[in-house]
Length: 85
Image (cartoon, rainbow, N blue to C red):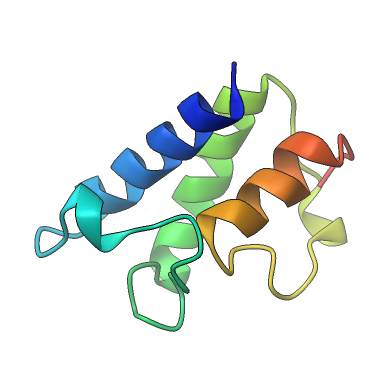
């Protein structure tokens, strides 16, 4: 799957969680936690969705602060680095 496709799916997922958002509200560099687009309640479901997109599990114990800062950060951390988390 391409970077663009992954970012698009992540964007759509976040928008689906918040009725007040549109796709235009969430850019690659939008600070999704700081803006309240992603709550701690959503984080676990997002992790499960990322695992589905990656086709590989995420080791939760190795998560670092800022992993969900933006769509670009999520992509880099979970799809480019190729690590377990």
